[in-house]
Image (cartoon, rainbow over all chains, first blue to last red; front, side, top):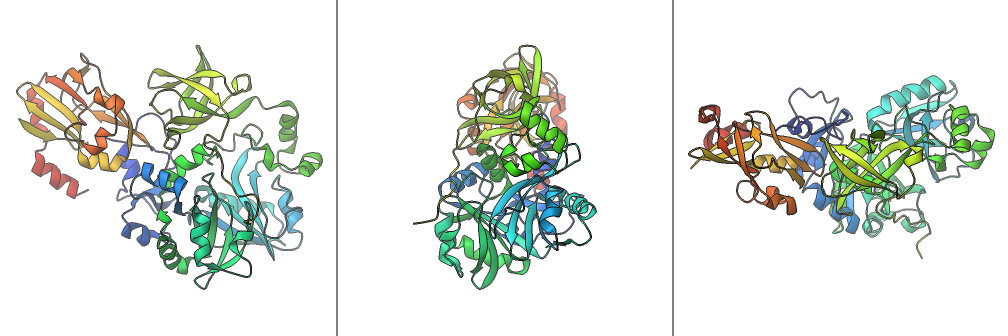
Length: 398
Length: 123
């Protein structure tokens, strides 16, 4: 039995392929440097795989069990591979609005916003999170493309804007319905953790360590993302996992959780060939930015906002048990109408689900199409996303 | 009955010209939770080292190769309803298919249990 390209190796996955190359670390994998929690993961029995140029934990106990634990309790994810960047300087908001479609000027202190770096033709260079910090903007970008993102920003932003790649920080995500209770128990600060609502962050202390904590994440559950000094990462991870609600969770369950939540993954569902309208990310372009334009690719994006995109990102419920994965082609009769960009078995749904792009004429929920997997046609229905309801906390705790 | 192993982590249990094929405990542990198994129907001709079955875990699809050439006589229909048998009982109830060997000489290049354990220990 062999296996090859996988979702997690950063290589485009096709049909059945080589497992050992993807799941096991081989001696010649070039890993830039260990992440702050490398030894911590190994000591907890994680299986490490190459991802985004780092060795990262794909699973501890098993993807199904870790997925279920996160949906029911709280899972701790190490996302220290992601790029943490602090931007500052005179005219920062205007400068960022020239490279992003977000309403940066309207972003209040502690508030967080989803946005994208765009090419001049509206393609997505990366998707990211912006937060207003007291002296600038804190940005989190995807690990696999962070070097390119930073080079792009340095080239596009004026010299007056400072860009600090915060390589001395680790990033943890605590996700699940019990995340709040677990984190609150060990967090102190000027404010109670309960003041945070979804897409809001603030400064807190965990066991005396300064932490930027935001109520956000990538699983569809309530949860938090926690930026701390890399030197304190092991101690904080230990403390979090000492809470009875918390277990460490690998990349495998992170992928199945985000797919059930209908959240796109850069490099799979998003690329420079895809614009935000086709991707269904129009919520990230505010009313003011739509009226004013002035962001890269605005001509094409505003045209597509008005007229609709020729292809659209949709979810699929797949009949049977056989997963349809990235690269599988979508048909109606003999006509190819799209392809799958993410897919797999959904543990909470209990069936295979997928995300892909289809011609707009076939994108209406309820449309019945076929997905080809190894020469077989699987019946699939266009399904509104998320597949599992979001449980974001949008109002403050009582 | 003699059991042989391949470097691709299949096992084959041979009795005369008849054999049963599955994947090893090591393989299932690496794969993780198995959610679907595609086994060749009876009558399928399989060739040594060529794809014979597909096992899908939560994270990926993997080919299973035929350890030797032959004709499939039976596929494990239990796997359709309960693919997790591959995780819970890889070397017994989680077998994949049975076949009639067309060239028993092909068994000679395979490992016995001791050799396979040493092979896995070196990975």
